Image (tube, rainbow, N blue to C red; front, side, top):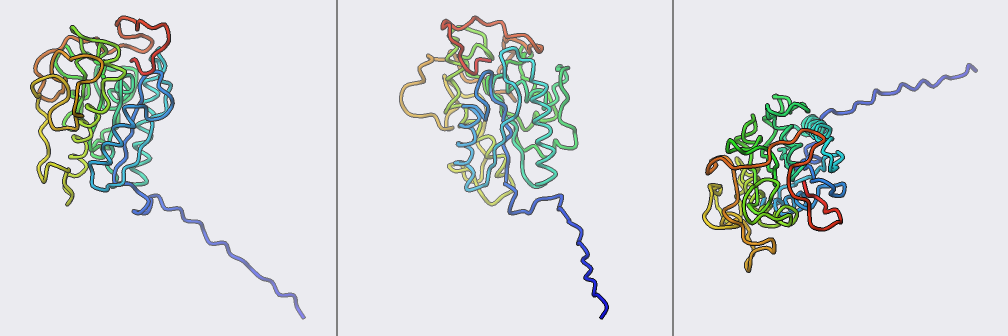
Length: 289
């Protein structure tokens, strides 16, 4: 009897280039933390995502912490921008319908400035133009960018119509004037400004869907300057006295329709530190710039 031979033909392994819809979030927040903050989203980034999830009626929102060395020397913003752009590309390739939100605090805002394509920055490459349509919103906090002409880089880029930039008037990194303090930078953004930004981002994510922003019906909230100190009215300010960093001298600086040129610190090249007074404490304070 002749020996029988069993032939096995291996089927080719097919790996889909696009993830199944069930595996893709409705939105992804790509956020760059501030200087000396522990690896991760940072305090401001975490607060933004938490608030955003509470305002978007059950949308699945994924977060991604930009991978870069957020050191005091500020030599790695370009690397952070490259990582953020690489993440945008991979997310779009796997989940083309996922809406992407870019965000950054302090030095992380500088990372976003590069990604946003500010022409005045020459140490990093911007997001390729074909991906601009995938960006639903941009939110930056404590942005040290030059504001002498009345607008930060995120308002002078292809993403300007989708951007909100928030500066606490008591923050010396983004605002010059009486009443500034380091606590205005390190403690002055959660929850008032993160809630305000979350409302802005939520309105962008919910646009064109059957969902509405809680408390606003089918109308998106307005973001013009509001009178008085602190965050804009109606965006999650907690009852009671203002935060311990003191009474800000004016309304939060939001750009899009700026009230006029603001004296600022200018965008610093890598390896430099904004010319502000050092903290009174001898111990390092995380997230200063």
